[in-house]
Length: 633
Image 1 (cartoon, one colour):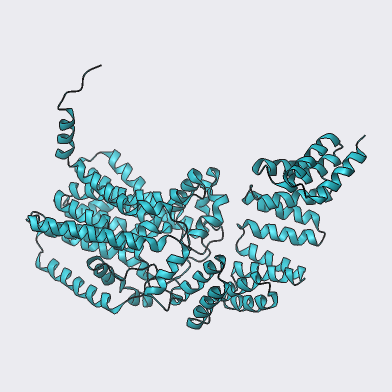
Image 2: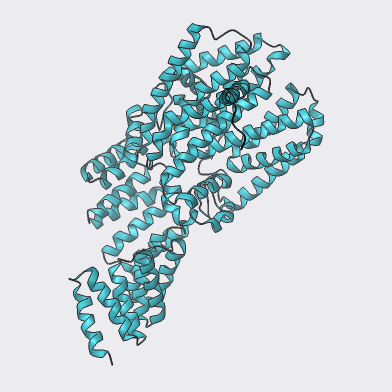
């Protein structure tokens, strides 16, 4: 074996430093130091439970990946939300690797943030921007509080992926322009495909590619249109076609309206203002006049600066500003109909646009002496201060209670936050606090259907079923396509003895949301109570298709199979149930019954003995043991 030269570590360091690898390492290290603790966070209660917890039986199976191309962003087959299949696949990868372990999901977001920073530094370098200035600007962005929402809120994954895929596509585009190698062009098209199918905003990327082609390559637009537009248009057309097949409403869950755009355009100056002064950041913000005015002043200053510096070498000033405006526009065209109940915008949407501001800043100060000793001290304090703010703000995403309390602190008229926080107060043993929050929500907006539905759910838990029906009827009157409301009304009707009404409401709920396992389970229970055993088995089976480890559904199906004298089917269910949970007492009891039906007395006795071993006070099992002994030949 060759001996290692004494100066080998120094040579490695010289190589790394000479190639500025330490810049990349620092861009990776800083976010880890600030956000590593977020890997222990749970759900925020805002969309992530809908995507992960309620769909874990679906997203945790690798064989279901092709199906996401037939579902909306919330993995519903009859979607009225956005169409973002590549983003959903990323959630499925997390679930396949770690199940419902949210550390995997949070780590994925953090890794994507780091990758986007590293790619951005490489992009800025090949664009000819000053590397040291680029590093400093991106180092500030790596811990900037404005991006805490994108990193800590799991559903912001789409914007993180959009950044990674968009930057990658632009890097490969630049490589192709510089070298003419087809491998870069093919790779560029692949990343453009991924970007479009992760978020519809990426359909604007050809404008960015065209500007780069013009500013850097000095090429003619006509040449680009003839050679490259067909590939981009083909991908966009394919996306729109598939989206049209999936979404019932082609405007998504909200409304695309030019009239509303003028109000939403305020987000453009607000993001700039919050980038300069990162205060008032929250989970569900409203537009604040202070940030609007400051942002407008800063925006006008940028425009004035661009007009003053119209030299060819300052092309990237324009390129960066157009990037910012272009990627800020799509959210302004979209108004969620629920926004009037709570918030004007979400801060994770600043993530991709602000990369344009980063380009603008680097282009504006390149080749200038900005690193005297005093400036370095200021930069250290700035990064440290931003890191401290981001670290503190990150805890707003640690739990639903923290998430919605943070929203209410900065936005006290947020009906959505009061409504959602009530659910978690109740689950933490505070029914009075939960009802107070619901009343606050309804006082702000009496026509907020989810608050009426949750008030019904609260009264269901309190077993006040008549009141629950009254409240849920209000929710359904406001929103006739509210699947969860029909489920809650079905539960209330079932407890009031209106079984046919319960069946009707469960079926209505399933027609609106066919992917919820416990609704099939509940419907099976109603059929079983009515003595409609064959129908009950069908519903339990549907629940088990969605969630094979649904232990209660397995147990109840075994019970019904026993009633139908399908002893082998009952035995199979009990065996599967025991494999999942060896301490499931009633599974051994039902297994003993199934074995008795099959005439296997000895093994039936062993099964019932196991049930008694788990619980020596299991009276039914003790009595059944006596019956087995009496009947045994």
